[in-house]
Amino acid sequence: MTPLSPRELDDLPCVVGIETAARALGISRTLAYKLAKEDRFPCRVIRIASTYRVPRADLERCLGVVHHDPPGDP
Image 1 (tube, rainbow, N blue to C red):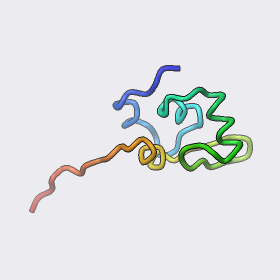
Image 2 (cartoon, rainbow, N blue to C red; image 1 turned 30 degrees about the vertical axis):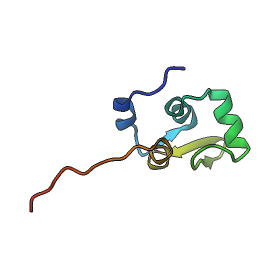
Image 3 (cartoon, helix red, strand yellow; image 1 turned 90 degrees about the vertical axis):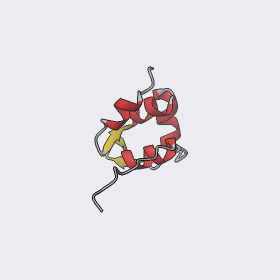
Image 4 (cartoon, helix red, strand yellow; image 1 turned 45 degrees about the horizontal axis):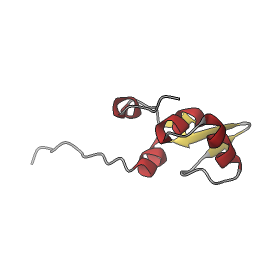
């Protein structure tokens, strides 16, 4: 599985599937599902019926991504 580039990470929607989160974290799909089922995924996972979703903000925090706001007008 090819990891996400920084650009791809910036383009993600507010909530992503577990497979996309796995790509961002550099882990396999199988391991991602295993960790989610065991409540050991490295960031918050939301279970909706039989699917898992990961908030982008939590994923970015887990990855140590820091966003800097552009300087505003004084």
